[in-house]
Length: 309
Image 1 (cartoon, one colour):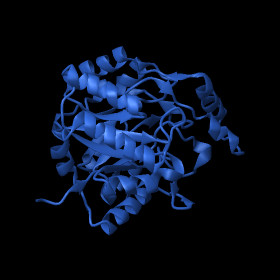
Image 2 (spheres, rainbow, N blue to C red; image 1 turned 180 degrees about the vertical axis):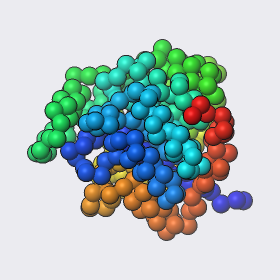
Image 3 (cartoon, rainbow, N blue to C red; image 1 turned 90 degrees about the horizontal axis):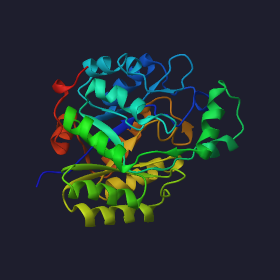
């Protein structure tokens, strides 16, 4: 039996953290491209990408900004490019889909339900804000629903999945999201091999602890049997402990400055720092890292030659 390969996903910038929280957070297209390429060279086979306004670092859904870094990353690396459809909880669905529909990537994230997505607790830590929008965005999440209705999800599966041949990183923030995914499977709107990302530690979703990870895995096994691959991301300080447990449980892992700004007790100076950190842990567990070609085969992706950038 061939040894199991572990897929490392790197989420390069996201829309959760703000420029005042770390000087190392990639914001401009050049910074995002440089950091993503370095993460791929360090061993990430999937790059999960958001965009930011180059002027002040706020999240943006503008396809023109995405197109300033997507071709460059594709030219420099064979990594699978995975574009968010989540964007930010303050964006409309049409805004969130604009860049993926233009780029037609191999993969996109797909959030599996509406939820509270609370970032306002990050206001509790005193800091000097560089931009007025930063505390305003965090506070806005106190009274915002991250909207992903069944109609929304059906539309993404139809327009991006069926329309563009894109497959999905199904982001499940709680156990109920697994049942929603099973519903789409039962209707024939999605098919294996499914790539399910267990998301732990967002206020409004399931907490980041080993018991919850084990529970998510147990329910996913019951619902999907051997027709899925799972990966784990954990927010903040629980990032490395929980993804290490996930790897030992037979899963894949996600790192990146979207999920945690730290490498150990220090601010991570790049996404590649976190990739190297988890790669060392995987080596210690005698686990092999999947190449981009192996990740494409494991997840039945269409190939980097069939994207629109």
